[in-house]
Image (cartoon, rainbow, N blue to C red; front, side, top):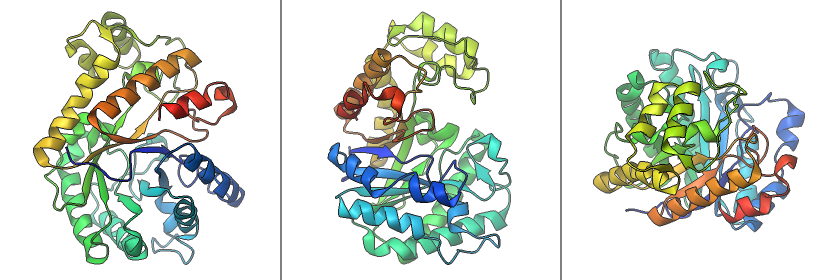
Length: 342
């Protein structure tokens, strides 16, 4: 399997330039150079930086004069401390993975797609000379399956535009169902050697997102250990997530949901990578802060082991806050152990 060189062990900087208020005090202080230095000292080789179109575009949907102020700041910090960086467009005009953002129309409105491609053109121009350590991720977590083929077309056109200015930067593409492994099977064959397929891994979701208020059907009553029996995971997934999520648990041939289950799922991603001769990468994985420390560490140890067996690079979600923060006070007692399993 082809390797995504320089992007093996990383962490997300979620909640800074995306999923935030964009207030100046927040933008100036949420992530600082000291945080980047800390991540480098952990032994990571990269960060993934989610950012929204609001950071780059003004009210007229044109690139702002200071569009790259915060992106440049982080790119420079990373370069200083020996880290590579993925610039991940987390929200574009007309689409967000988060239904609460109320962004609609991207997959239907050509004008929104034109803005998207023009924005990536400017980003490509700006970072073309940093191809050795700056990669581009086109868009975070496409949702519905009805967008799969439309997304393939938009991605292909955007990559052609990017390549006019930045022929050597890696470009990451994820699939439907919020960058699910299944979504990788619906992506078109890469158009050049610098394309990487990206998936997210939060499985089993009923464990990693137990009690998550933003998940449909999930309630505070959901409580499940890791590892546990297939029967228990199937029942809890059916109750708190629904048939689509429970179905994959049911198809698993093992008796216990553990590292064997993770390996069974991720083998699908590996098969896609080998068939299409494309590197694969896991842009997000992690466990909600509602989970007990010992359970969280068991999951991290197992998922890290599977990533290592397959040679899959990854970035944990997330450095701070957003209910998953590695450095949050609630995880102070186990932060070092999490870092050892990144």
